[in-house]
Length: 348
Image 1 (cartoon, one colour):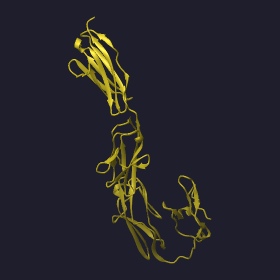
Image 2 (cartoon, rainbow, N blue to C red; image 1 turned 90 degrees about the vertical axis):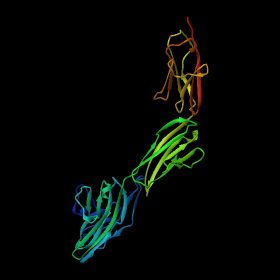
Image 3 (cartoon, helix red, strand yellow; image 1 turned 180 degrees about the vertical axis):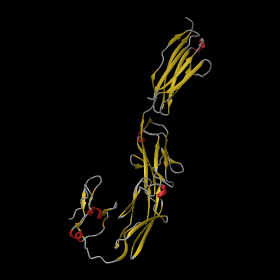
Image 4 (tube, helix red, strand yellow; image 1 turned 135 degrees about the vertical axis):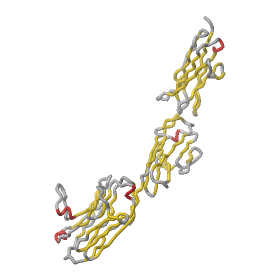
């Protein structure tokens, strides 16, 4: 079996042998000694490393006869994402060896470092949308000419964003996922959970003009998992994913106030902190009547990065009637929790 080694420095022999991106071997300026070798191709699996070897082939080399060009390998049409590379094959035979000329949309190719003319065809790297068009390969010698042409369509690659990301929330929540797609139009969207296609049911529905929204109503613990959104167009696919964790998110009071006695006119502040999933909202009552924000009562609420919701009631100038049982109630879609204590307002 003959083996051509092209390192460290390419030799004349190496320059005569060309291997295409799709596995074809071409030999230019064929010599009689090329018939002394047996040629085989060896493939290696990308992931497993397993190798396979083809049957051997011998080359018959005869004296050259003058002939018009023949095209040994050609292309017709192709669609590819921008940013990738492609080889447009145009391997020609004939004697004398034909010259090759490439045209784009009927004009000779301009100079561009991304375009490489090879014995086996034209290689275009870092494809751009403007590279789309009609490509023609003309091969000519003193006995005639041949031409092959085809269309190249460069498309903007699909880009998918699924939101929200890595969501942790409570059972019974209503969730919305949005699959945003940029790039080529006329795509289709499909949804998966834990690698299985999502089948709409009483809890899960797929909505939107392009099926770009997934709604989960009254979510249960079994709805936890990895969600994927796939956008597909003519065999081109892009996807994004989100991890959802559903837990018992019933609120719980984690910080509160204690019973006390204050003098009339002596300002006081009450604080209530609660956690839950989703983060709860907190309301206040005084003797079972809602505390209304006004000139006497100032309320505030915020949620910290760790999910703790904190609420305050500030009473700037309390009267005796502002004493009583203050209750804070934390609520979310999973349930509620409350805490209460008496604040007495009377003179010492």
